[in-house]
Amino acid sequence: MNPIFARRRGRLLTYQAMREGKLTSTRRVACGQCGAESAAIEWERTGQVCPKCGWHAPIGAYHRLWQILDPGTFQELEENVRSADPLSFPGYPRKLAALRAKTGLEDAAVAALGKIEGRRAVLAVIDSRFFMGSMGTAVGEKIARAAELAERRKLPLIIFSASGGARMQEGIFSLMQMAKTAAAIRRFQDRGGLYISCLTHPTTGGVTASFASLGDIMLSEPGALIGFAGPRVIQQTIGQELPEGFQRAEYLLEHGFLDQIVPRGEWRRVLSQLLALHERGKRA
Ligand SMILES: [Zn+2]
Image (cartoon, rainbow, N blue to C red; front, side):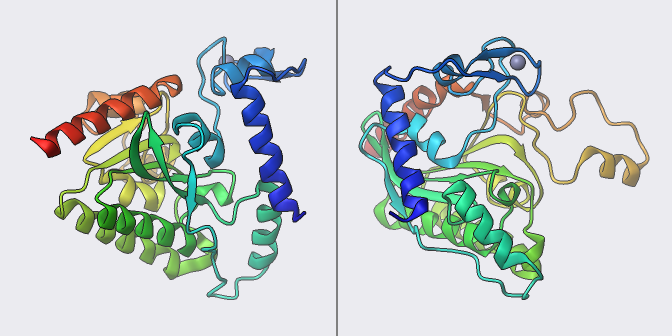
């Protein structure tokens, strides 16, 4: 079997075991924030949230979709969209191949059709393990196509973002994805589509400056860093001290940029409520 498929299959079997409560392991995992060790099985139970301090560890795109979608409704879209090497950037194809083999992903975004408590939606999830979730041509294309499909099928669009920004190995082609994704989302919204933007740690750079900030409803996980440039760059540019907690989800909620902070275990409930309200609104 192709190693990527073998790994995906292994992961699916693990998820199935987790769902059925059959997973047993004595492995312990240290928290990236408080350093406390907890049993791996505890981490699985909380959806990779530290059982001691509540830190939300980053999770992969397939894992995220598995947590949110109804079992058996996941249908991957545009699986074969991959980044080219438009600038012949030294070492880029080799790095892409290595990351594909390591993560089982084609690129940093996974698009899917699925159901949340019985309600259909188009989803896209960015995976920060792949080039820091940077937006190259493949990520931009998948987001734009997901918006177009949602528009054609008249389905809500849900995007989970996590990104370090532009894919510098793709230069201007990477920057062009900001305009492309923003235009596709705008067209979708102009025709009455509902777009729920879900921000996770960290969402920065060109992704924040384009589709991630355009949600009709803006949600975030607790503690997520959300911004365009890093705090040090801003501080040096404007020559002023930044306020405490600047660019964290909680600060952004207080200042009106976010509508709600959603802990990891609540995504399914919150999203399904929003989809239900939207459905009812459309019927009325
Ligand atoms: Zn912790």
